Length: 119
Length: 107
Image (tube, rainbow over all chains, first blue to last red; front, side, top):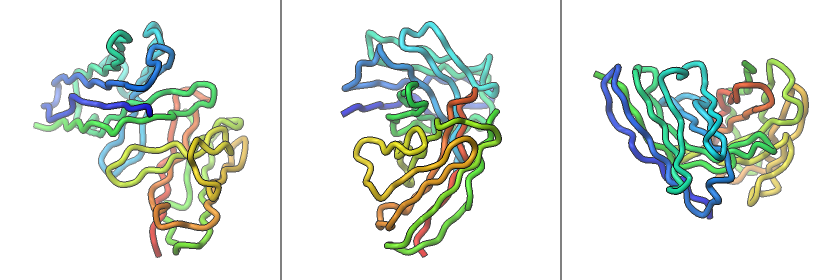
């Protein structure tokens, strides 16, 4: 069964940085696009960033463009999200998700990691 | 961006009843509309893709319909485990967007 396990969340001050990881298993990781989706406390879902299978093409929501960087290490079956210049409004649970571009869905999700931006 | 508006915000029903959830898009998304279920403390789970295709392992009581801008998720006879929050999502238009969710609660 496909498993995605996020880590790296925590408390960070405004303006600070944090790097999230997502380890994949039971998945031909290097053949699938991946995304990060976040959910602010008690709120809905917001797609944040996406990455092609080989890592050569990246996509970002306007709200994080220039501050967040998505990357992957296919040799380690791991997806990353480097977050900098963090703001209070970036506080959320961050999920990694496997893309299914043929159907336009996110078909597998991790359990999420909480990022809290506060002084 | 394409705004997805879900209604109602909250739906109060009893087990065994039929639930009808709506998702309306601000511009056409063709048939590429998905539905997810989320329970407290859990990740979203894909239920329906391409408007009406049930994902692997999803019971037949879940049915999706619609195209263009108007979509419906129907749960034919509610089971206790169906009470959760449901989100719709599109990727036809960039960026991918989600609806704000419908909370299905026990009456």
